[in-house]
Length: 136
Image (cartoon, rainbow, N blue to C red):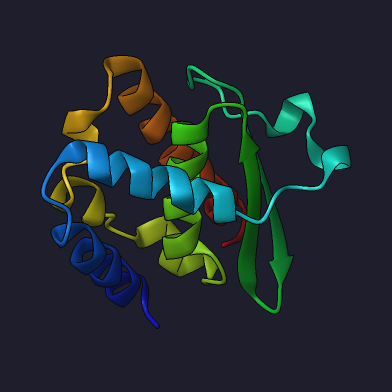
């Protein structure tokens, strides 16, 4: 499944929810399903700067694809990084670096986050893209 197809799948899932409380609950559920980063990888160099809460992100380069794992100490943030990983995981660095993450605007995520969480979202996207650029 392409990055675009994964994003469309997320958009289609969010359409069924009428209000943002339901969408937040869905994001929280996604965070609960996130495969956690190994405890020994919860190091300061893996913390994403610019997030209100602590978010650890690790990327491994396997079979010419980036494989991400993460954890966060805030449940909404954990769900947000889970969404990003769902879209970008197991993709080539080139595809990640050039990806237009349109689903964020389509589902209204950025406009329904506090300014600090919106900055954190941007920091997460930037970090994942930078990890990809390092591998190109």
